[in-house]
Amino acid sequence: ADAVFPLHWTCLYTAAPPSTILSAELRQELRKIILRLASEVPSVQRSNVGGWQLGEDLLQFSEPPIEQLAPEIATHVRHFVHDLWRSAGKSGTPPRFGLRLEAWANINRQGDYNTPHVHPSSHISGVLYLDESGVEHDDAGCIQFRKPYSDLRAAVHEAGEPRLSHWWRSR
Image (cartoon, rainbow, N blue to C red; front, top):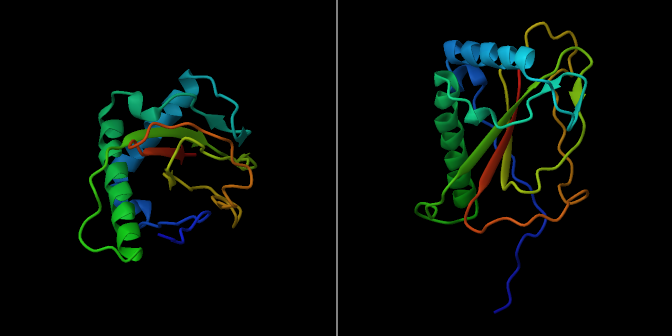
Protein backbone atom coordinates (compact mmCIF):
# COMPACT_ATOMS: atom_id res chain seq x y z
CA ALA A 1 0.00 0.00 0.00
CA ASP A 2 1.08 3.57 -0.55
CA ALA A 3 2.40 5.38 2.50
CA VAL A 4 4.14 8.61 3.39
CA PHE A 5 7.19 8.46 5.64
CA PRO A 6 9.22 11.36 6.97
CA LEU A 7 12.60 11.09 5.30
CA HIS A 8 14.75 13.89 6.70
CA TRP A 9 13.63 14.95 10.12
CA THR A 10 15.39 15.48 13.39
CA CYS A 11 13.84 15.32 16.82
CA LEU A 12 15.28 17.34 19.65
CA TYR A 13 14.84 16.07 23.20
CA THR A 14 15.67 18.34 26.09
CA ALA A 15 15.97 17.15 29.63
CA ALA A 16 16.09 18.94 32.93
CA PRO A 17 19.23 20.88 33.76
CA PRO A 18 22.24 18.70 34.70
CA SER A 19 21.80 19.76 38.33
CA THR A 20 18.60 17.73 38.45
CA ILE A 21 19.83 14.87 36.25
CA LEU A 22 23.07 14.20 38.08
CA SER A 23 23.83 15.10 41.65
CA ALA A 24 26.29 17.93 42.27
CA GLU A 25 28.64 15.38 43.81
CA LEU A 26 28.52 13.11 40.74
CA ARG A 27 29.06 16.06 38.37
CA GLN A 28 32.04 17.17 40.46
CA GLU A 29 33.52 13.65 40.48
CA LEU A 30 33.09 13.34 36.70
CA ARG A 31 34.69 16.74 36.25
CA LYS A 32 37.72 15.67 38.35
CA ILE A 33 38.13 12.47 36.34
CA ILE A 34 37.92 14.31 33.02
CA LEU A 35 40.42 16.95 34.15
CA ARG A 36 42.75 14.17 35.35
CA LEU A 37 42.43 12.36 32.02
CA ALA A 38 43.24 15.59 30.20
CA SER A 39 46.49 15.83 32.16
CA GLU A 40 47.39 12.17 31.47
CA VAL A 41 46.09 11.46 27.97
CA PRO A 42 47.02 13.49 24.88
CA SER A 43 44.15 15.16 23.07
CA VAL A 44 42.96 13.86 19.74
CA GLN A 45 42.04 16.20 16.91
CA ARG A 46 38.54 15.49 15.66
CA SER A 47 35.94 18.22 15.78
CA ASN A 48 37.73 20.30 18.39
CA VAL A 49 39.50 23.56 17.66
CA GLY A 50 41.62 24.15 20.71
CA GLY A 51 40.67 22.47 23.92
CA TRP A 52 41.10 18.81 24.69
CA GLN A 53 39.18 15.81 23.41
CA LEU A 54 39.38 12.26 24.73
CA GLY A 55 40.19 9.81 21.95
CA GLU A 56 38.48 6.80 23.45
CA ASP A 57 35.13 5.94 24.95
CA LEU A 58 34.83 7.53 28.39
CA LEU A 59 32.46 4.75 29.47
CA GLN A 60 35.28 2.19 29.14
CA PHE A 61 37.01 3.61 32.21
CA SER A 62 36.17 1.58 35.33
CA GLU A 63 35.61 4.29 37.88
CA PRO A 64 32.44 4.48 39.99
CA PRO A 65 31.30 7.95 38.80
CA ILE A 66 31.63 6.87 35.16
CA GLU A 67 29.84 3.62 35.91
CA GLN A 68 26.97 5.69 37.37
CA LEU A 69 26.80 7.79 34.22
CA ALA A 70 25.88 5.03 31.73
CA PRO A 71 22.52 4.18 33.38
CA GLU A 72 21.65 7.89 33.46
CA ILE A 73 22.33 8.15 29.74
CA ALA A 74 20.28 5.01 29.07
CA THR A 75 17.35 6.38 31.09
CA HIS A 76 17.21 9.52 28.97
CA VAL A 77 17.50 7.56 25.72
CA ARG A 78 14.55 5.41 26.77
CA HIS A 79 12.54 8.52 27.75
CA PHE A 80 13.32 10.04 24.36
CA VAL A 81 12.22 6.91 22.49
CA HIS A 82 9.04 6.69 24.59
CA ASP A 83 8.21 10.36 23.93
CA LEU A 84 8.95 9.91 20.24
CA TRP A 85 6.70 6.82 20.16
CA ARG A 86 3.83 8.76 21.74
CA SER A 87 4.34 11.81 19.51
CA ALA A 88 3.97 9.51 16.50
CA GLY A 89 0.50 8.60 17.75
CA LYS A 90 1.46 5.11 18.94
CA SER A 91 -0.15 3.63 22.02
CA GLY A 92 1.37 1.34 24.58
CA THR A 93 5.09 1.11 25.01
CA PRO A 94 7.72 1.05 22.26
CA PRO A 95 9.28 -2.28 21.34
CA ARG A 96 12.26 -3.32 23.45
CA PHE A 97 15.63 -2.41 22.04
CA GLY A 98 19.26 -2.77 23.02
CA LEU A 99 21.63 0.09 23.54
CA ARG A 100 25.29 0.43 22.76
CA LEU A 101 26.44 3.54 24.58
CA GLU A 102 29.54 5.59 23.94
CA ALA A 103 30.69 8.85 25.48
CA TRP A 104 33.66 11.07 25.01
CA ALA A 105 34.88 14.07 26.89
CA ASN A 106 35.75 17.57 25.70
CA ILE A 107 37.29 20.40 27.65
CA ASN A 108 36.65 23.72 25.95
CA ARG A 109 37.99 26.84 27.54
CA GLN A 110 37.69 30.45 26.42
CA GLY A 111 37.95 30.52 22.60
CA ASP A 112 37.82 26.72 22.12
CA TYR A 113 34.99 25.12 20.19
CA ASN A 114 33.90 22.12 18.15
CA THR A 115 33.33 22.38 14.43
CA PRO A 116 30.16 21.08 12.78
CA HIS A 117 30.30 17.32 12.50
CA VAL A 118 28.05 14.31 12.09
CA HIS A 119 27.74 11.03 13.94
CA PRO A 120 27.03 8.71 10.98
CA SER A 121 26.93 5.46 12.97
CA SER A 122 24.63 6.83 15.64
CA HIS A 123 20.87 6.88 15.83
CA ILE A 124 20.84 9.25 18.80
CA SER A 125 23.43 11.78 19.91
CA GLY A 126 23.47 14.00 22.95
CA VAL A 127 25.39 16.56 24.95
CA LEU A 128 25.76 17.07 28.68
CA TYR A 129 27.56 20.14 29.99
CA LEU A 130 29.08 19.31 33.36
CA ASP A 131 30.49 22.72 34.16
CA GLU A 132 30.09 26.17 32.68
CA SER A 133 31.74 28.10 35.49
CA GLY A 134 33.94 31.03 34.59
CA VAL A 135 32.22 31.51 31.24
CA GLU A 136 32.52 35.10 30.09
CA HIS A 137 30.47 35.08 26.88
CA ASP A 138 26.72 34.70 26.52
CA ASP A 139 27.21 32.25 23.65
CA ALA A 140 29.45 29.89 25.67
CA GLY A 141 28.02 26.42 25.57
CA CYS A 142 25.94 27.29 22.51
CA ILE A 143 25.15 24.40 20.25
CA GLN A 144 23.91 24.64 16.68
CA PHE A 145 22.06 21.96 14.80
CA ARG A 146 22.17 21.75 11.04
CA LYS A 147 20.40 19.52 8.58
CA PRO A 148 22.01 16.15 9.27
CA TYR A 149 21.84 15.09 5.66
CA SER A 150 23.69 18.12 4.29
CA ASP A 151 27.03 16.50 5.10
CA LEU A 152 25.96 12.94 5.70
CA ARG A 153 28.45 10.22 4.98
CA ALA A 154 27.31 6.70 4.26
CA ALA A 155 27.55 4.39 7.24
CA VAL A 156 26.84 0.73 7.61
CA HIS A 157 25.42 -0.26 10.97
CA GLU A 158 24.18 -3.53 12.40
CA ALA A 159 20.39 -3.57 12.45
CA GLY A 160 18.70 -3.51 15.81
CA GLU A 161 21.58 -1.93 17.76
CA PRO A 162 20.86 1.76 18.31
CA ARG A 163 24.02 3.57 19.25
CA LEU A 164 24.22 6.62 21.46
CA SER A 165 27.17 8.95 21.08
CA HIS A 166 27.61 11.70 23.59
CA TRP A 167 30.21 14.35 23.78
CA TRP A 168 30.88 15.69 27.18
CA ARG A 169 32.46 18.96 28.04
CA SER A 170 33.97 20.09 31.25
CA ARG A 171 36.10 23.12 31.98
